[in-house]
Image (cartoon, rainbow, N blue to C red; front, side):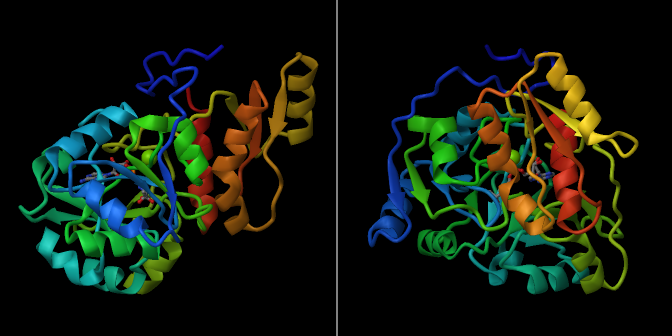
Length: 329
Ligand code: TXA
Ligand code: MG
């Protein structure tokens, strides 16, 4: 049985979605053309990125953008990240771009880095929920960049999962979550980074971290020559709710003063099916396997997933953020 999701706003997962998926591999000679054709005709396509799979729509198709929100069960007040083909498109879709923002984009794109900047009117209202700001990024995945380039229009893409749930890092995850509700899924293998992009707000005097992610925030501070403002609490900014990334199983985070062994023993003695997150010393490996580990625990029917928090630096900051939100109720 699924646990209820009282007042959390997290989309409930139907017991079984339609798992008949239309899938193509990125090395298929027709994959770019087929993807572009669908996107150019109000379609939605699950696309690979180096962070997580995205549910893509052309920003010029109001119908496709609406379908993205509906398919995810996502409130339209949560704006979408707009994916550009290259740095050169930055000032076509943003205005009043600060020197700091330009320097970071130049240094970090393509890559797991998203900038919040003032939007140009070329970005339609429905993509950003009427906000005067837009989140922009150039993904590192070469297939997806080729699609954006060929389409000639940026692609809005949230992570290709049900709202509030665990993000997909393989095409199979997308198929299991969204099934036949997507016109096409492009399989490019597992995502290299495995957690979403780092989002930095450049609309105020000082750069401010909105969401820790695949690019260590320390790298952005080094590029800027001053520390990006970081707040390690779960702040409910638009779309960054304290409850997010939730598997079906409950997630139990081990606090610093606790012993993991003791918590595991207590939970097991109470008859719960407990799965512990695998220990890995490498933060990149931990990040890239995090979501598949949460999903695997659900597949084996775990009641509780026990997770130790990594250090709060580098990719560890993103992993901590995801585990904290996954464990909120
Ligand atoms: O790595 C990523 O960023 C992935 C891949 C697919 O690119 N995308 C992703 O999108 O994580 P999504 O929608 O799952 O998360 C984007 C976050 C949300 O919290 C959203 O509210 C916030 O970025 N965001 C997007 N546009 C915004 C805007 N104009 N103002 C404030 N927040 C915004
Ligand atoms: Mg998401």
